[in-house]
Length: 298
Image (cartoon, rainbow, N blue to C red; front, side):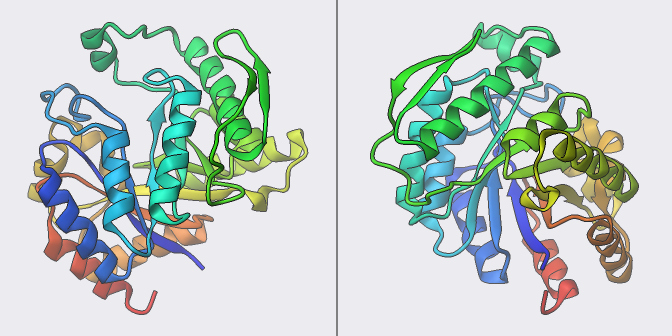
């Protein structure tokens, strides 16, 4: 059965508004809420008003009762993987075992430059992602982890107390077919991609499954999810996404109730195990309720 969730952006909002939104999402029947990892706006440099991810992830775990509490996705350039693993383990305890951990290579150079964080070429960032996911996986699932990489090293490292979940789900986010999808195939439990059309999603999913075959994994072990905008009209699209409006348009649900429902069905037919509404402030609660009513019993 397809899971429906909400990916609520942390820019240009308040903790009070987010906490109220999370409760509203849960009351509407969604099964997933996730946060992003940015210090600045994710709208191509439109300011620096964005809440920090680990703290907000913690609040999400404490303020909800039923939904999965995800992260799409933590940048491996911002925190050592052992620090992140320990934080997520604690959040898992606070949630009662409802946390998912997403990782990505990072892309918003304006944040790195502003804070003096190295922003290496994409190959290096992908190498760091591949090392980080192995470190996190070991710390969250094994009693003791030793890892010798170029960027990260662990020496009989422990993460205690252990997470509530014996196999806390680890996601990889991104669209790169040669490295990102191969890393997901080898090390992840889930793969997420934002703002793509159904045919693009289907093609990327096929590439992921081909990588699974190459590394000896059954493709069904990896959940696949797409993040989609929800904007019933062009004004809403531009208000939410600003300069990125045209860039994300292929992956935004728009039109009548029937058109939105048809578009969602196209993603499900393309193999999406999970569909997340990627919303940005000002959050349109009526639009969320309308979407939930359009889906009906789903």
